[in-house]
Image (cartoon, rainbow, N blue to C red; front, side):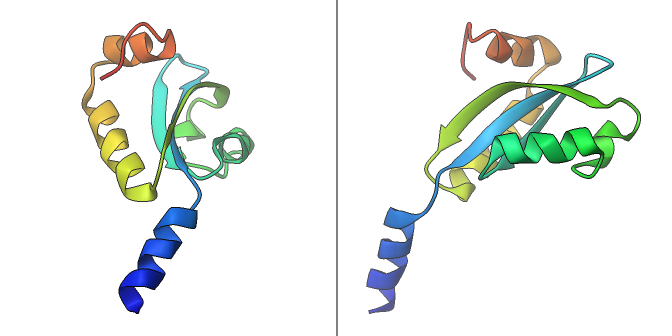
Amino acid sequence: MAITQSCEATATSKPWFVYLVRAANGALYCGISDDPHKRFAKHQSGKGARFFASSPAVALVYVESWPDKGEALRQERLIKKLRKSAKECLVSSQCRP
């Protein structure tokens, strides 16, 4: 019975998103959220991540959807390992990691 409940929860769960935000200094911040636009607003208000303490968030530049939080976390880890040039490639949608 517990297996059925967990399968049902997975089938009805919300998608999660991996996103990139550009800071005023040009740096790219990678994160995950179940609502990237709301999370971006938090970053802009200075309450989202310490990353933006020195240079404020200026634009949500990339968003991709994943079926669950675990898959989004795995993709976030992969993107964080990329060089900035590869992240810029994602932003311009020329390639995927």
